[in-house]
Length: 103
Image (cartoon, rainbow, N blue to C red; front, side):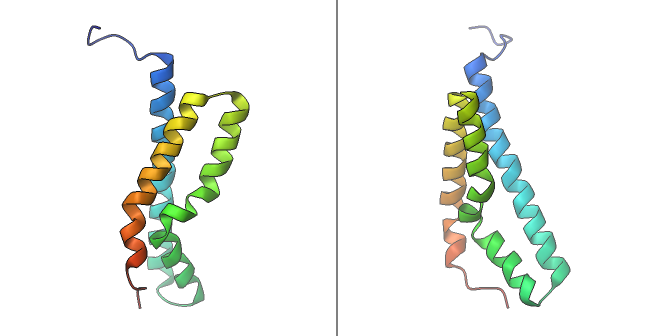
């Protein structure tokens, strides 16, 4: 296969699934951190801290609707890599769940 060959449709769908979830994760992390820095204490500060430290679990708030929509459209390659990206995020963020809360 030549180097300048276009990416096949299943390959493009897989790349989209992985990239879509990771872009959403970076947005989630950025918003959680900026919210925590802006609040700097108070009851909502804890919510921002929990949202960031447990990103592996809270990502399912936006990943599940994404997967349901992709399933209805029949995008199996997109779903498989979106689930893979969500699992990788969960595994990479699991050590953060053991950290003590920021005081």
